[in-house]
Length: 224
Image (cartoon, rainbow, N blue to C red; front, top):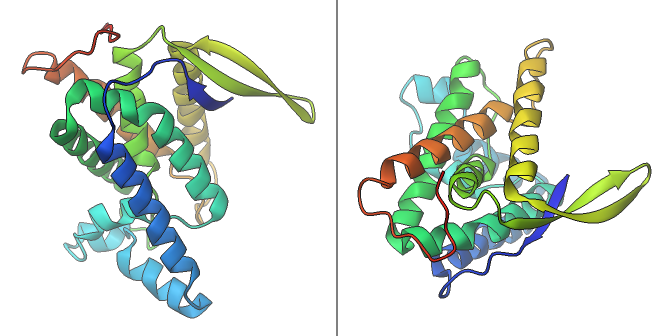
């Protein structure tokens, strides 16, 4: 189930979302201009390595790792989700709160992944934990707004329009089952499912907390 657009226009220009999109894309292009050996060095320098964080090394990678992506498919998927779910959160929260929301969700996501295997030396990179936070926030703010999705039917895909809660519940349940299943095999890299779960839960909790401290609600927001 792949989201391709929402039917929830945002108010104003989502400048922070555009900044995040541009930053991620430009860093990815910069990485692709390097030699393979330089790319590997860059990834190991700026990606989050759980064992190093636990030992207080390279704490800046808690943020820098959110702006790195390992492949064209990785960045396209993340930027698609960011573009769909980010602008509405930015419209509702305002630019500064939205940026802080994004970064805090990303940090929580990173720690959730670290705690699953604190001795891991595998680099963790990608914006998906922070974006999962946006998805959690979107679920609380816009549960009934329509999302266009691609559904796999055999070897083909068809489009469908569903309420946001349908797509987002399906997504988080898939992350939970995949994350639990990952414990059954030795991890040698792959998808950081617990970062997704941690980011999503952070998004839910942050929106719930912000309701009581001046959350700016757009006319189309409907909080659970």
